[in-house]
Image 1: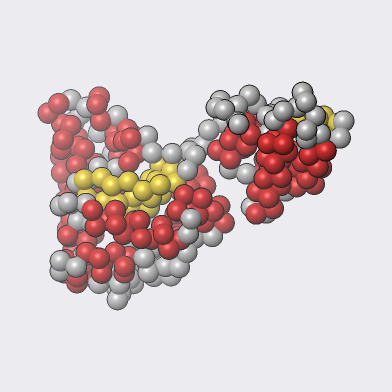
Image 2: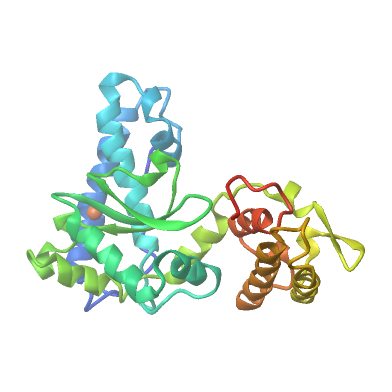
Amino acid sequence: MAYKVPDLPYPYDALEPHISEETMRLHHDKHHQAYVDKANSALAGSEWEDVRPKEILTRLAELPDDLRETVRNNAGGQYNHCMFWRSMSPDGGGQPEGKLSRAIKDTFDSFARFKETLTEAGLSVFGSGWAWLVFDGKRVFIVTTTNQDNPVSDGLTPLLGLDVWEHAYYLTYENRRPDYIEAFFNVIDWDVVAERFAEAPRPDVSDILDRTVSISGAQKRYGDISYDDARTQAAELKALTGWGPMAKVGTVARAWTALSVTLERHGAATVTDLEPSEVAQMAEELWIVPPSRSMV
Ligand SMILES: [Fe+2]
């Protein structure tokens, strides 16, 4: 099945004044179409003809040598631009909410610092390429790629791609890439980015959630632990502090207090509602699973 350029999910002039109608027409109708045409002509008749772009980008090493670079650039062009159009909206801008907002703050401390970092990344791309917000199953961070490479080739989930090819901005912003990046922030559709984050693969922590811990003499599943449970456990362990055989009990008591704070901060009813990466990391600090590193 040959690739196609999808229609824009909004009119060509919908992103004005941030991204001009003229830019959108050229970028979507000419540049994106050119990637699609070149990808189709390279793939036609090959065993890769029916493989979706995302899968091709994760299996580049398997492509025949005479196809690899052409397909990498043009299947990449197709995948990247399909994502790009859907990442923008005339109702975009502002900041993400919910779990994505927390993940961004966990990594960058604030949305403002995230914005600065993505901007710096976009400006750092020499020549043509992209700056990305990606997720590795544990945390979000920023990477850049050159040409039409996509982070999915490195096993990462792309959440948001900023196209910094000159064709994305030159008609309006000429050589002023910083002004284009600033404008891009006014059209980011954070709902779409949040959906990608929610659907991204995560490590399986079900065996950790099913472990049990004794709280006030009753066995409780880690995944079912609530704010009140965590506070109770923290208080009971704190009372043991200083008791010889429990040398590290103070550290563990503090970890239970930290768990209660985390549950409250995330509005999570139980540990099951937290991000898997947090579930796994805290399980070590709470000694629900043996720590992989020194807890001193
Ligand atoms: Fe582009």
